Length: 113
Image (cartoon, rainbow, N blue to C red; front, side, top):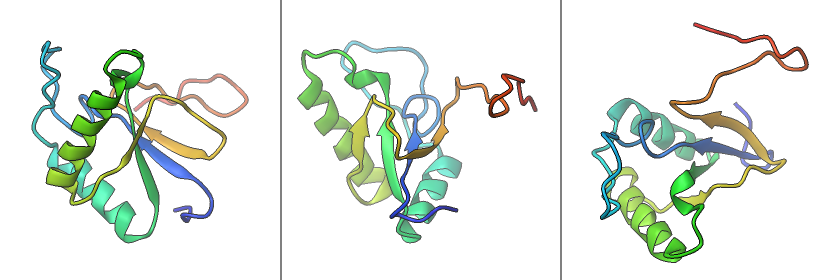
């Protein structure tokens, strides 16, 4: 596992960290998914930077309110607020997401399970 000085791990919110059963207009965040919450807590104990990576903050209107709602959810279920983003950068070392498909580096070959 890379250390904090190297970069950050992105974790998708809906369907990965929190249960997701379709969008609700109130922006409600689902119940925590224990396996993923424990994984995030372990990374944090190892001083790894973890960020919530979510499309929820892609719309400019209401973005700050949505970020605050997600941070409050993290504080309640993870024990601390996490940064929230929808932007990849060069410091992102991993992305955990229920929709992502992994490909082999520099080949485009799908790495399936």
